[in-house]
Image 1: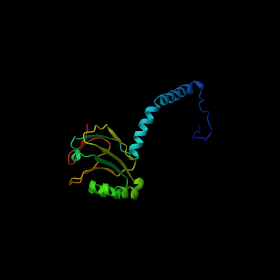
Image 2 (image 1 turned 135 degrees about the vertical axis):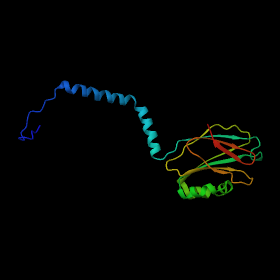
Image 3 (image 1 turned 45 degrees about the horizontal axis):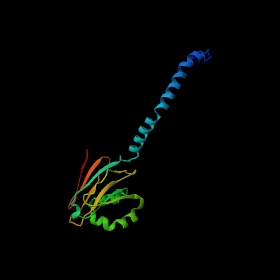
Image 4 (image 1 turned 180 degrees about the vertical axis):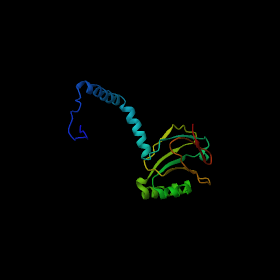
Length: 178
């Protein structure tokens, strides 16, 4: 220790092993506690990282199809996950008829900036729960149902929750699930 009066060194207190022991035990205990809770810490850290990197939570879809859906014909349904901001601006105005006519071209044009999940069901078919995992950097998502009747048959898909979709005779409905 330096004494400011005469700038000479005085004898500092020497730490004895008895004083270091409680600190060493405390550090060891904290390290062991951290190791036992690793999986919980990792899962919490992953959740925080996913939110920080803009990865929405998975979306649960419960799809039902009426016995007379699509005038008793199979119904094609696409969920489109869009990363391109310009395409996302145009997508909500796109009808299902336009989507299905341009689908292959749009997939070539946007490549990895767009992911498509497609299904086709017959009227009355039982459908199990569907999980849609959204990628990081997603601008938005759309649902398109291929009906021959007039109408858009499309809607933006809210992400990170449960959604009920009911395929009906001439159109589909979509609502927040519980």
